[in-house]
Length: 177
Image 1 (cartoon, rainbow, N blue to C red):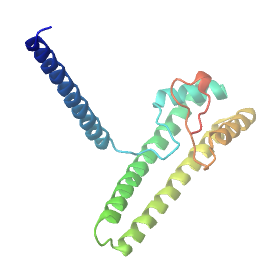
Image 2 (cartoon, one colour; image 1 turned 45 degrees about the vertical axis):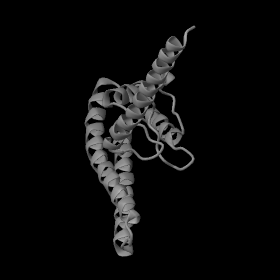
Image 3 (tube, one colour; image 1 turned 180 degrees about the vertical axis):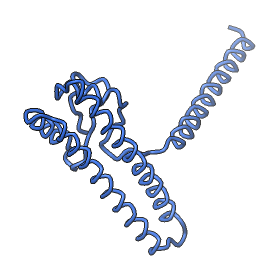
């Protein structure tokens, strides 16, 4: 092979390697920016699942009849609206807390205030979840109530956080992280 061909091949290899490195770096930054734009409204150990999938899950697990299913949909909508608002507030408070901790001289009074608000929102979220459970219990038969209790028990992970069924799991099994 003559030296000119070797030189050309080496140049092409270098060009390909540079292009590969640039595309990898661009992809990394693109995904990093895209992920930072998605608000984290879920607590650790929880999975967001579409409302219709949750409806199907509870219908199948509790054998809800049509009247119960209609009532469940109303209860579930009210729960989702309220819980989503609280979770969004929690996400914003967590972000504010991290930002405050990151400044040169964090204001400890402000940090205490944010921590209290986070605690209040956690309390509200637990109250909303309890109301959801009690409303569900009201529409269930005694047998369904026992099953509902077992479902809620099985949804608690080791940190007492409620896990929702993950999409794609077989027969709605719970996944604890």
